[in-house]
Length: 127
Image (cartoon, rainbow, N blue to C red; front, side, top):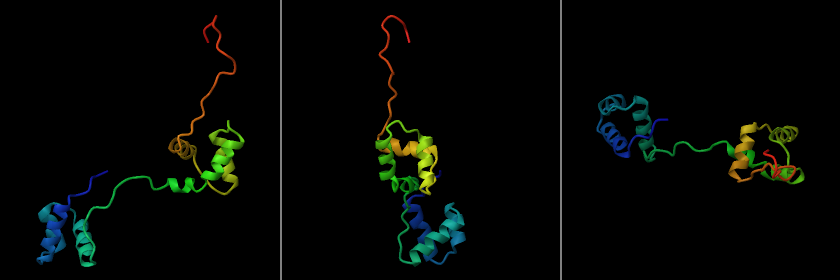
């Protein structure tokens, strides 16, 4: 993903447009896309600043976070529930979630299920 252009460059393009140069000519002069220059000039005309917006980040986790009470309750009822079983329970409630989505949910909440030996390890033989 490309990084945001500097605030200084944005301001210079907007100043050039304010002097009477067209957005496309100002964009060509400063080496930015015409659509960016048009968008920045429109932002200034509407009274907004031309500061870059925040890029990236998680925009989807809130869909599964809404169901956190149900998911954590299902984990309390059945501690060894698999992600596939949990996915089916969510599907019964009308919510669709992938295995990876559930995995990331548990990772965010720092919930892990450690597998344990069913019997103590043997001292005589290697397991």
